[in-house]
Amino acid sequence: MSFKDAPLAFVDIETTGSNAQRDRITEIAIITWDHQTIKRWERLIDPGVGIPEFIQRLTGIGPDLLEGAPAFEDLAQELWQELEGKIFIAHNANFDYGFIKAAFKRLDMEFKAPVLCTVKLSRQLFTLQARHNLDSLIAAHGLTIHQRHRAMGDADVLWQFWQVCERHFGADVLVQQIVQQTRKAALPPHIDQALIDAIPDGHGVYTFYGDEHLPLYIGKSKTLRTRVLSHFQGALTKAKEMKIALQVKHIEWIETGGELGALILESQMIKDKLPSLNVKLRRSRELCAWALLPDENGYRRAKMLGAQDLDVGKQDHLYGLFASQRMAKNALKSLCQQHALCEGLMGLEKLGKGQPCFAHQLKKCLGACVGVESAERYNLRLITALSALKVKTWPYPGPIGIKEGEGVHVVDHWFYMGYAKDPSDLEDVLGLQRPDFDLDIYKILQSHLRKMPKDQLALLSPAPVQQDFETS
Image (cartoon, rainbow, N blue to C red; front, top):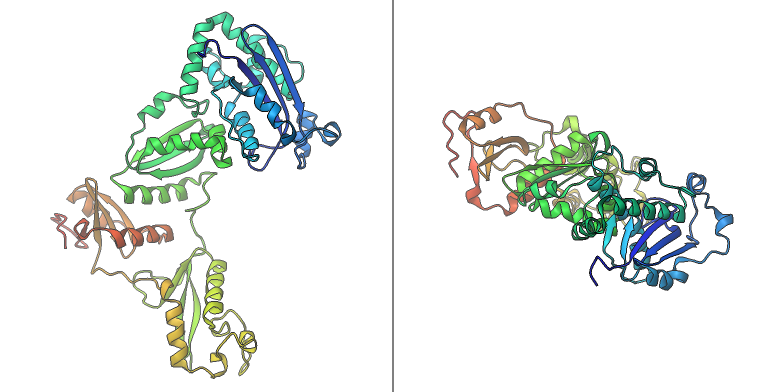
């Protein structure tokens, strides 16, 4: 069956919230048009979870109204039959389609349908109209609303809007819109295909912006366009991707010379722009590490050093770089328990003079706290246990350049200085004041240098005059 003959399903749902994985559907309405007859189908649904008060006030759907309503699984087969073989039409269709798809998936049913979004349709056909939300469509086209924020009332508005479009532009134009949208169904309403086509498919960093050009999410990829599209394809099943698809208004990107540049730029931009949907790579205000220092009896004790006491790359007695004191203590406590180390000597438990730690009383510490285990044996076990956390000193005599693309990334004692494309750039970068230490970039550089071919590394003079990127 061609799209011209395919039946249309105008769908609207009400829910307990905006997260398709956590929240649930409370009402579904479908108006089916097979080009000859109209059929209306609506059901209240017991969500099995509480409904927030503001949702109840908005929709009028509360526990009293839902008393005796079926659960989704009880009407899943009936709903499937209502939607099967039809073009799924909804306003901000990613939302409605995503919730219904997620609800079927919880029953191990894989629902798929061609999707058309009426927000996109309105933007394409009524280009001079300022806004395209449902209330704006009602006002602009004189549509009749029987019950706003109820599924059948809103679905009926979509059916009326479709008829307006058909009168103004004809059935063939609408079929063309169906073809275009179902081919590009993953794109959010405000994102044009031309913008997606302009994104290169190489290394770089992309930024999703929402209302008032506020950053929503920053990511990196070695295939920018493909990665951006994957967010929208995932919007139907993943809560985070749905949030992006519903809120994104604009996309910007910056190309980089390779993977390292993308990783570093992503980390820097997240700390600078603080996008609302990024959790990782935020700036750490509590950077700390453990130092192992001998006491008067020769036992090495752990002392926490804060950011002001750290000189990463030069200090040889540091173990673990942590974003917070809580993370540092938890990591050390775990190692103590795994290796029968003394939490008292590690500063995790207050020791009375000559008193054993609590773990020794449980026979989970070998007794360094009371001299039962010798300092030599204890220190050896301690250093072995913490070896994976050892902070490496800078292994080069000075700054280095890591070749990528047309230039080099300049790094000095684990501090990222910048990117230089030619000798004059290099001199400027090396003359910059050293930035604050960045734990995420330290981890990125360590990982990259471990697997980097030797011919991509250049030893640099601290004050180059005629630097030619000679390799070591």
